[in-house]
Amino acid sequence: MLAKKYRLTKHGSFNYVYRHGERHNRYPISLVYVKGGKGVKVGFSVPNKVGKAVYRNKVKRRLRAAAAVYLGSLCPSQLVFSATEQAKALTYAQIENAVGKLLSKAGLLQCESGKRI
Image (cartoon, rainbow, N blue to C red; front, side, top):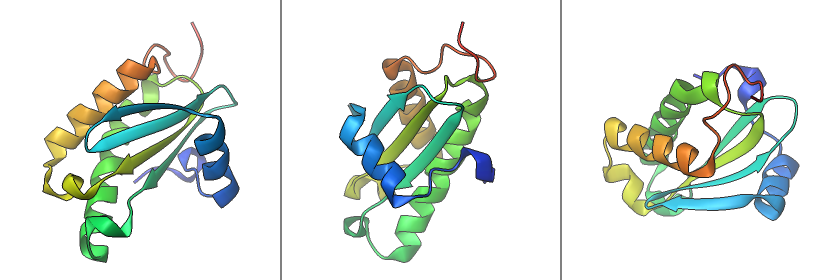
């Protein structure tokens, strides 16, 4: 579980990231992010098309756990991970691999303990 200080929770915060952010895709997971800010904030979006609440929550739990692995080495930014219907068929290892590749493709893994180099 992500600590409260790392969560992106407000509707306006999600809208800001979607409006001003850069996008990277690694099907069936995508990343929208805005670099900068005081720290790292992470949000997750799993639509109703994924399935009933059980499946959506399972995908969100796996995404949260995968994102938590990389929290210590992320640059200050706001991130939103989104999943598609096919994400419910992925294992945790596949999701963690996709998250890592998305973060490295976006250039967000170059900082240690939230500080810029």
